[in-house]
Image: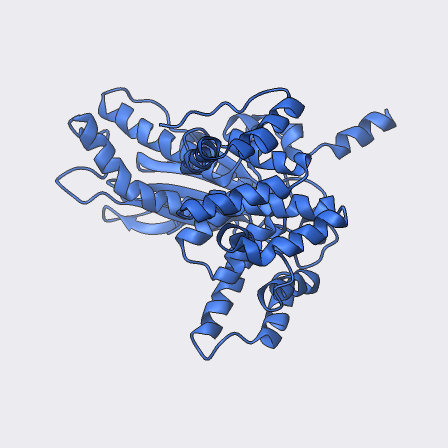
Length: 434
């Protein structure tokens, strides 16, 4: 029995719940699609139920931020989605009446700092000319009937038990006491995983599991970089994570209670770099202290070594200026440093799939030379990156086009790189370029 208990304790939280593990980008897509489909189904005349979502994942991974992103994007997308369906807008579709510009809002509450009384209070009021008591509802509750949005419960499982009971009514009935939420409001709750790294206060009730659709989000460097590039994070942060994607989240530091790097802290580091650059230039002595408080001392030193001292091989240089890093790669090969070579290949693939730089003949030549230099097991990571990408993504199409261009251009690429990998791996890369 003791062994079984220990084995259970070793399970990850998403394994205990037996739920899917998805990237932030996938979760965004799922929730957006569900909301749009719900509105379109209402518009068609079928009054389906709304889905309450429960997003679980490590602190700093971006759970809270994506709720605001989805709300902003839905403001632009729902109206056009319904317009394309050529369906009349009946009263079942809130927020789209009388020619108004559609707006999808967001209201967020922080469960650990609130109590049940912050939401619902019996209070004496003058009602209809007579003294009476009725229930007053706080500004935390959406009330405007012709409105839409997300009611986001942040850190639900860290709220006290009486608050959790009230919020369970919100998740199950979209109401607080006798006050129903406007029809266009959806509910999302957000939690850290209930494991050794976090202090949770879960109310043990099997009914709680049925109230929500539970999804666990994992740390995904590609998602982070896609967002960072789109929002113009400082190049030092982007290139550092492209080169070392495993450093986007420092799990080891988190486990021992240290300050730890995570997507949110990298965003703050980017802001500090931009502020310095806009006011006289980057001061790495200051970065040393700022970074220690955001990322921890060790991660900050690695970052400074990369940004200032250029100690690592930058994947960007492999693509654009291969001749400047070729000798350094040769040294790693002679030293049989397969660990460093593997890191370089993963970083290179991450750079390629997130930056997707335009390429000419000389860039294809650089790619070919780089891949042909690699030991076969390390080089195979390039094919694995292509083969493992989402078939509908721009990154998959980009990497596939490069692979096919090299196959057409170079017999050596096929003979000395691709065919040996196929022989070792036992199967061909299944790609189609359109």
